[in-house]
Length: 201
Ligand code: GDP
Image 1 (tube, rainbow, N blue to C red):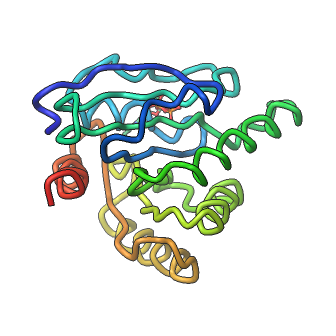
Image 2 (cartoon, helix red, strand yellow):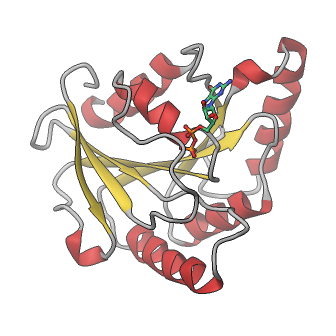
């Protein structure tokens, strides 16, 4: 799926600009600097597809990427703006929450959202807010731990166990936590397979 084609499609600031819901869609969310752009680039095997280290809080767009075929055999991947950045104005947060909520509520082809969490920091309050929103919108989501290369092997198990325990009470959360490192390439094939299963499975 990912080897075939991956292209930036459009950035949307309003729901009326969403592409038609004619194929499986997965979404990526996470705090600014969690490593979302790096993970997306690793996933599609193209550097520079998703821009790394965007100025936090500036882009309030949902970016859409078209993966594989241009029909129901293909995939839409949406990249949600990074959150949790302290310097963003209240009005911008409000605007973004509104856009996000309506997107999550009204997207029938959205199969799963991946919520990226920095393995060094674990789940933060701002992640909880997003997860609660997804629970309320009945969007199933899965935690993806990023930057696993930054923590020691002995620590990794603890982080995974804690994260798993943390999400257990959230109804829409997938029980399995994915472990990734974009720099080392760990977990990327698993993530690709998880997504490909939704399209072909
Ligand atoms: P975004 O703001 O969530 O899109 O995060 P970026 O992808 O721009 O990454 C933020 C910073 O973390 C950059 O300096 C990346 O080089 C670094 N980074 C991202 N992924 C990894 C990873 O898997 N391992 C390590 N060690 N650093 C990473």
